[in-house]
Length: 556
Image 1 (tube, rainbow, N blue to C red):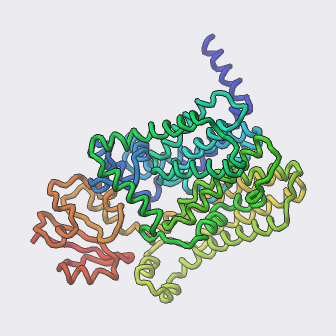
Image 2 (tube, helix red, strand yellow):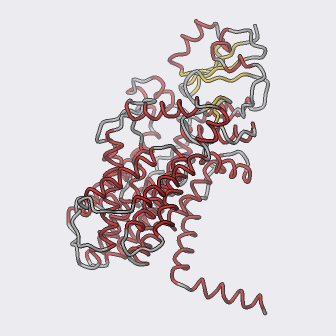
Image 3 (cartoon, rainbow, N blue to C red):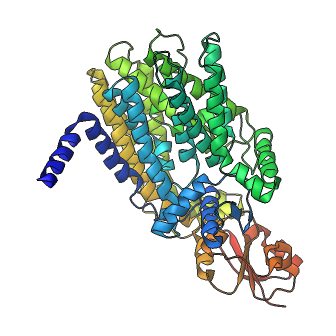
């Protein structure tokens, strides 16, 4: 009887609209983010870097200090690596485990924006906002990766959402909201660093100024928020300093200041870099959001206040990381939250006939869909006939990489027609004033298109980039050799399953090249630099493949 009642209650709860919506989002997330997650090797640098940090925690049993090559690694705090460690404990040390954290994060993100949209507007808005993430190119790709930013961004968004609720006059339990907002931002700090706190404080400052400096919170609630951030941050930074001294913290701060003031690791880009990334990479929501990007003046309602909060977040993040010297595609990924919200807001207003669908929006959608479709359709044909392209390439490494054998039929890009189909279907519905149905069609077809393209292209592209060297690393895993790459990489550590070295000299590249080594040492470098190393260190060339040269130094 009890079991029957329990089942009846579960069935009844599932029938509730919000529970039903959440189950739909979870199923979609499982379909988009989990399948074939481990089919492709980890990509340098970030995926391999982070997975290696987690692997070394497991190998050493030291879960407090982040290490790379068994030396302290001060660039990132440990929370994301702790998550990967748990995943690796469950699924093993492999690509699937390294990426599973973000797949899970993707599902939580869909639920978070659905809940936020439902509370601020209604269920319909929340569901459409979640589909904004589902059907946008870059968010979908990042949730299938092993990088830090999706988790980092989700914590910041939760913190911003709770702060916004705390700013509302009618809100009760303000202390709880500010305290939990601080916890969320603290976890963001523990994921990637103090830039999380910097972003949030800039957003608060700009939002406060836009409201003509009207009081947002009491001093006590502000102190509670900052104290909560500090409390969580102390879990790592404080304990690390107490246990190991201040060296790690000093290097960590120096590194992040260097990122702000100079181009790091070849990631220097022009000021407009992130604008282009978002326009093309966040298709189609980048176009749907455009009518809202500059409209700050709205009637005073909670919905419009949140819209302003999202606008502030978008422009703060975009301008901040456009000013910063070091730029990667990932740095503007926090804008995905406000951008998808603003796109949803525009579509929602158009459906209520408070805004008008403009012809230029259709032109923009078709234009960017055509760019993506053309690129993906042409690329396989070029690779199919790459013997005609290679003589035109001046860079010897790129030419050798493209020449690597790989199965390109020339038709791999056909699914990219889905981008055009998505826009065509949407504009058909828009012309009949079925805006919500048109947007769901646009985002759904786009999601399936991106998913299929990722599955088809990533493995083939890897054949021309890193598969050669990773296969070599795997062949040496667990054997009595030294393996050292002569350029910056993390794949050599992860795929050789490197263990702590008894001979501390063996961590030194110079010692491996010139010292009294006790076992053979293999080296990998780009072919165009190989002769320099061969002549200088008397190394033996094994073979060249894919733009790489494989060398050996025997025991003297």
